[in-house]
Length: 237
Length: 293
Image 1 (cartoon, each protein chain N blue to C red):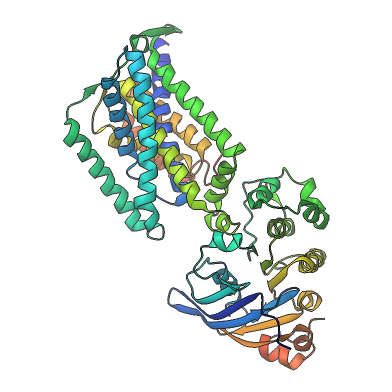
Image 2: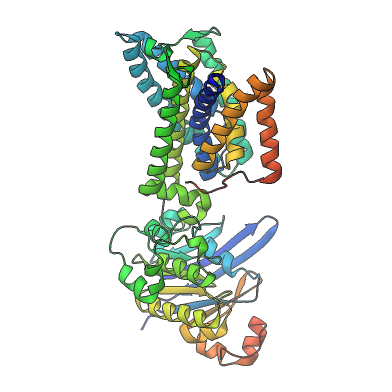
């Protein structure tokens, strides 16, 4: 029996930022459904990989989404193919209200306001508040909500729990789990407890290349491998 | 007292023109990071389009001015949109080349106007009621000052309403903050760029019309001389802020008038540069930076 074609295929992706050759031929597949975690030490090119997939940095190589090559498309056209993006630094529009941030993300079609407000009831209560006055956790909720609002087959989520208090980390992880029921998530995450909770597959990057792919449970269950690949001790618990 | 009132209203009229030029400049830079040195040329072209159309229209000066102004606004908007589409868009990742293109375009458009209509000033169609005066607190104020102030006020309210209540306004406000993230939400921000250029071009043309009414004539150097003060207004107000631009335009117009009269004639321009220096020292990012409201 042949394995189903991956939803996303990244093939030989290169990115140069100034003098630095940040991505040196990244290749990996993301299967449809669930969460695939993109892991690695700081500065190995995880965020750049997502930005390159989004067309936010000049890149070489191919990215294929559901059989269609997106590398030649501009960022807005990639998003319109059904890719939601939650950037590393949230990038909410500080001068716009929460409602306006969400309204800006509307792309027509069916909008999932019900789901967004079910996951993050606070956003409904704070609809008129300027996003710049929200806490870091609340801003992260806005960033995730913007990506969840549309019926995106793919979500690229970059370090959503970075700098958040433990209670908020749990809330964000729950939102990711719920999102993964509806869509395919490619997640960059440093918090291995979150990875253990939400991810089924892992792709480990080092030095601008993929050095390991496989099951999340298998990697996180092997402390030696975690130490050698990620430079941290212990599994995800 | 009557002198002070006259200076104040005249300063506000001048500030109104600065605001009309500077608001477009400010939005264009705030959203797109483009320093548009051709903005003054858009004013000149708008003013000349108004004057030229008025010479082809039958009727009194009022009709000539109205029809001419409409034509001027359309020409300003269309020319600005074309500049964005043809010259600016291919250079979005090359800011130095962009600046050079706008500088070159300013020189070329001015030269074109001079080549077609000569260096001499052309009389503008101004209805007599605009030249007449109205007495306010003992001061005889030329009526055109009120029209200039009213036009700028309408534009200020209209621009704010546009930015606040329309989808494109929302995109522009967001784009001023973070252009890349707007595209990452699936929005083709280039359409907003063209729209902002067109709005800026029509507002510059409106400033050209009002400056024609204010001075009674139009000449090829008008846009360039007003552009310098508009840039100062934008820097003081903060790039991308319409409210900040309005406050700065009023301040610059008033200070210019007061300094010219109460200190020494010609000192007004120096006072404005001094104001710029003070603002840059105290608030380098301007009065109200990088938020389009």
